[in-house]
Image (spheres, rainbow, N blue to C red):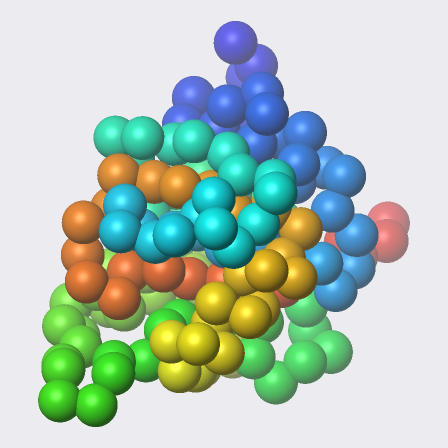
Length: 144
């Protein structure tokens, strides 16, 4: 156990977050997401919901300040709907740890899958909220 690091972060997830470089992307995927079909680097975080995982990751992870949308979620397919409570739950840790972050952008389902294929990793969670996937783009850690 390490001090100051959430026990929600597995050693494998910490290693992936460390190895990611500026501009790399990671997907925090809901339990319905086809992670194994989209990416060869899949980590398991079964039983964890995404909002608490964001709360654990964001103190350690700089969002990319050089892009318009370092946070991206999947948009609803035509005829379906989004539950605004899902995004609101994700925005709480975002606003807490990254108060200057841009709003969460939305992209279509298949565009999201394409981004997941190119992502550094996909983290499969136990999140059951429909359209609960979120992509984070890593930025540069400010120098001291």
